[in-house]
Image (cartoon, rainbow, N blue to C red):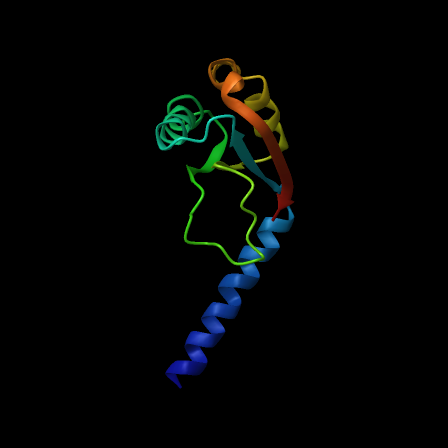
Length: 127
């Protein structure tokens, strides 16, 4: 009896969550992968610190993280052609667009652009 009630409660909760999410604008997942010209440990750590300093607290961000590529993840399927990742989820596209022109974002680019060998950006819509 308990299991049936729990299952019913979960189905109802997820059903309500999915139905309310479909009425909203999709969130934007913004994933950025930086390859550095000089990928020293100090440079990687400085870029992660810069991401946190300039980008973490911009309005419209639902989730933020930045880190150094995990060396332990070395399967054939793992992409190893980056040094630092930046992962942001925005409330919606409008928040993403404001971020793109935000002075702190532009300041981050100005400070770190000379250290970047390659930047790959992946944006997706999620509900």
